[in-house]
Image (tube, rainbow, N blue to C red; front, side, top):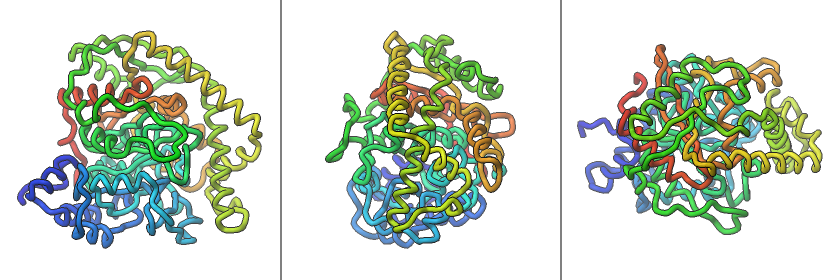
Amino acid sequence: MSIDLTNLDATAQAELVRKGDVTAAELVDAAIERIERLNPRLNAVIIPLFDKGREQARAKLEPGPFRGVPFLLKDLVAASAGDPLHSGMQLMKKLGFVAPEDSYLARKFREAGFIVLGKTNTPELGLAATTEPLAYGASRNPWNPEHSTGGSSGGSAAAVAARMVPAAHANDGGGSIRIPASECGIVGLKPSRGRVSVGPAFGEAWHGLAIEGAVTVSVRDSAGILDAISGPMPGDPYVAPPPHRPYVEEVGRDPGRLTIGLMTERPGKNGKLHPECVQAVENAGRLLQSLGHRVEVSHPDAFDDGDLLPHFKRLIDAHTTQAIDFIGQLLGRRIEADEVEPYTWRFVVDGRKVSASDYITSVDWIHAWARRMAAWWVDGHDLLVTPTIAEPPPRLGDLGGPGGDPRKRWERNLEVIPFTPACNATGQPALSLPLHWEAGGLPVGVHFVAPYGREDVLVRIAAQLEQAQPWAQRRPAA
């Protein structure tokens, strides 16, 4: 075919397969060729599964909506039976650990018709807002390889931005879908808490802070993938309310006249935002206003409460400690400090100091804070719009990589991501859209937050913005 297959989104690729205009094997070969050509520069795909993918493309395909479309799994949480699962850890890489079974999510991706071609890079245990693990080295931003891809789904985001594949798995415990989507100029939708199962190994991830999803080129792909992977599985402790209709049917549906609040300052006015991030939100506000929405400068008062992040970190400390202890149980011995990165070990040291009472206190505090946050939407707002992150993509080595004081590195990570963790604490759905590029050509995402359970609102407004200001044909140089 004369058409560039890698320039199509997942929906368009699947349509070609359904019509018989292209085979799954042709899509897979085109994706592999692009990965082999671009990955040495970007280091997005760390574990190739090309032979397995080609074999799957030649076999009887699953009859799902993305039948025959190439896909990548992030090397964190989404276990794929018989495939490596290293979670960004040198230790797991050295041990050659492989997943004993599929997670529900990996199974749902396959049932949707996706063909997995490999695993993508992630920081150790997903703990950083950049993807620079010692185990596999840094992923590089396709728009400028001297800059970060974001994290922790940075490998997936870089691969999609470079059009190695049209969509890839991602997960989000503090912004890890939305941060890399912003830095790589693609779409990143974090679903509501309980929308996507993390079973069978877990009932919830990070006490409900983390959720599974994907990064994509188009809004319709994000909607279609959410349809494919959402819904309860046996034994899930809680589930999000079911949608009124499939999310793909929200694409192109009139969102109505929404009341939208803009936030162009850091929570608590704690320092200044980069001017490009302010401009991105103000431009989005003008665009939304031109589309008939009511736009005002407003945000929840609770967002300015500086106590969130200490409680948030306490939960992450405890869960990181438990993860390290669990790996130790698998190995039959205690994991030592020199077996993980110093940045990770700092979480373990802090986590060992968290008592059961401390932990429950933080859970209760976050629950009460989330109620105060939710009141802003109940009081008549439909969406909150903020920058996704506080500055354009930082340079590699700024937030991660070898060396550096772990505590200062954590503080620097928090400087960059003042907006995204709030939605993990509340469980609300949130979305980063590629609506702005700075003068040097780096993308700056705009962040949209809807009430809990209302991904439909996000899909409608995102599709409207995509129609008004298309971004799909704006792509980094090959």
